[in-house]
Image 1 (tube, rainbow, N blue to C red):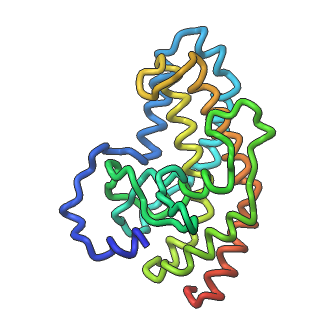
Image 2: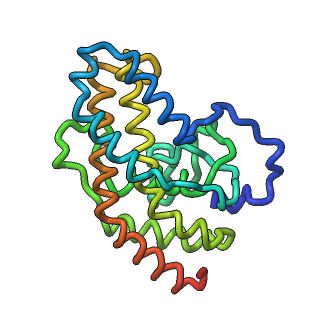
Length: 228
């Protein structure tokens, strides 16, 4: 609904408040720079997370959104940025609008899914608690089908990969911040950014394992709705 309402909004009026916010190539460069400048202790503590990041980067090397239309995106569609009605529990609107910028639809889709199907906090230390709730995913796709006539076929094809790309991007940002000495994200304990990265990378792996399932569900429900 958010994207439907903004489909005809003048793109030239939208200013990027945080340039490169979801630019994966930028986040990779920042990560590589952090590896060069990090202390020996931080590199040692983060060795597991660094290896996971480097492996996943190889898997995402073919990521190229160049053929996708640029849209006005919220860019922070985690579940706690959706306002719900107290009585009937229906979603009312997106809040926290300071990140509205140009971007790609799968940014908002992937970020929403990662916080809907996985019900633990993003800095969860017990990685066995990280889940992919299929019932919640399918309910979300049902809702999406009610408001997605504007999506192109290429955008629909990118929905499932977005569920892997977005948590990974958040994870590599948290890891980079840890390596830099926790200068961006607020932390309540020294290794919180490291825990965030491991948790987000664990969900990235979970999303990879559900890729075929997501693509099948998206194709089935979009076809049933006459959208593909």
